[in-house]
Length: 169
Image (cartoon, rainbow, N blue to C red; front, side):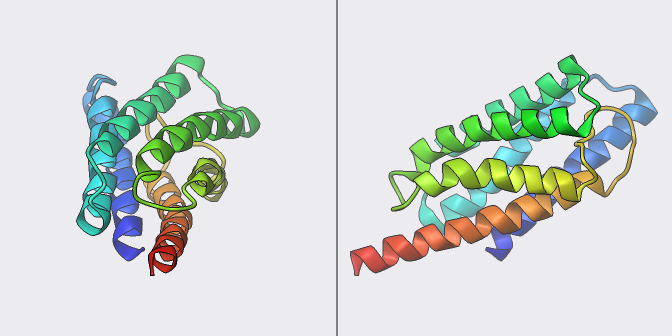
């Protein structure tokens, strides 16, 4: 649970630093794709270390996070409600796709489909109502999102592991 939370905190924290450098040096938004791969890789490294989850996790996560950030940029959603609905919808799709990977390793993987978007919404609310995608609003928003998301989804992973281990015993 702790490494999973740290991986999410660091992965989302890199997003904040990217925004600072994007604003200071006018770098292209294409760097967001690299950050999405980094975030998916951080999550996958933890899952692979403890559960031998295959690399499909990395690519599913990277592509879906890339879609989320691309939609946030393209749609210019600035109100909290619209932002939260978009995050919920994209993370619901992400949860469904990630479940296809988790299903092979865990019993109860259906919990992931709802826990990912709920954790995302609670993360967005904790981070002030929106996830920044351009400019500098605050360095703490994305790491706070990652921390909340990591704690909730990490708890769900732990629960799914417990169900799996007790079922096999």
